[in-house]
Length: 130
Image (tube, rainbow, N blue to C red; front, side):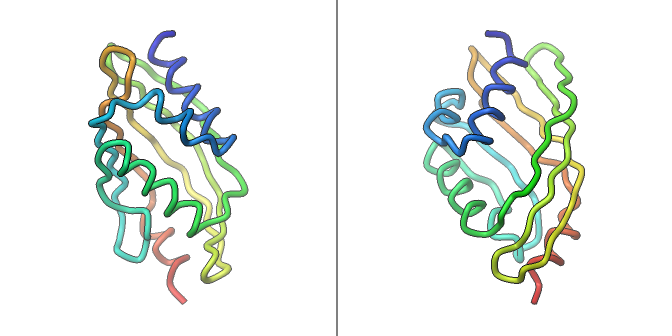
């Protein structure tokens, strides 16, 4: 499986809410960066498998994702960048947001060792505000 296929499999597992499946493609010492304001419960840096489990738990507890579409996969050596869109509703406020994003994965020996999300965090933070 090449790096793009690995990342595509991660997205497939995400769509299935299969966190154990996702973890099989992440290094045990992975660093996942999801920048954003403190209003966004799932923003921050998440380390290792425990951090990823915490990240996915916070996402599931905070938002109802109605659309999550990875659209384009770009690869260069050990890096895969994915361009996509999502739409979600914040559970606590009932407010919806729609964003475009880029997620960048760094892989080593067939495992994701680092990930970073580039997204309109202001729009998401506003949806979390009462």
